[in-house]
Image 1 (tube, rainbow, N blue to C red):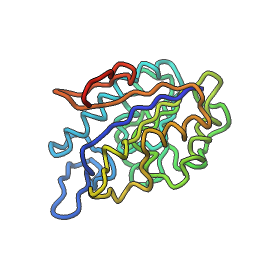
Image 2: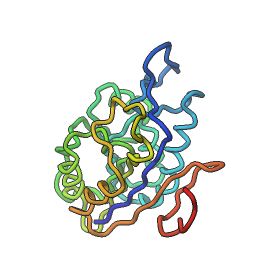
Image 3: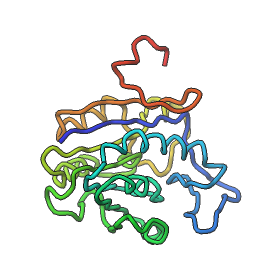
Length: 220
């Protein structure tokens, strides 16, 4: 299996700490822990996530896919447009209920990402966007991804780059257990996935995914 890295970098922690939070009927509450569609206040962050799914969804075509940490569920549902089967996994019971009601094409399981409730070699693709920084046992999770992937399988994973997302002196995101630098992330992935490709997301006029080898001397 190989791993892809798409670090979605934000300029600062996106955390709601006080005041009345926006709410849409039928939607999960906006707490800052997950991205929620259909909210004007969240649209910038939602679109940044959506472009990553759309950029990489073709790698899921006709395959059995696990989204480990399904969040609100919109990403798993987008993948279901092309995949043979989509399994969603989350630990939060409210997320499970919401996804089962709103996105019935996604087969939701409840479980711990450090002990994926799937047999060995049971899926072709594991998708994990903006989740690993929420986990205490990150090495165990990466090992579990390798375990459940079939030969030739693909791990597609992203995480905010700590040096840019949370520079010294910035507010900490209370939902993040351990954010990773690029070097730390590569080391974490390489232990179980020796063949991988790194991509970088930056907001320009819109949002783009650019291979690191293409960055050259650009100032960002």
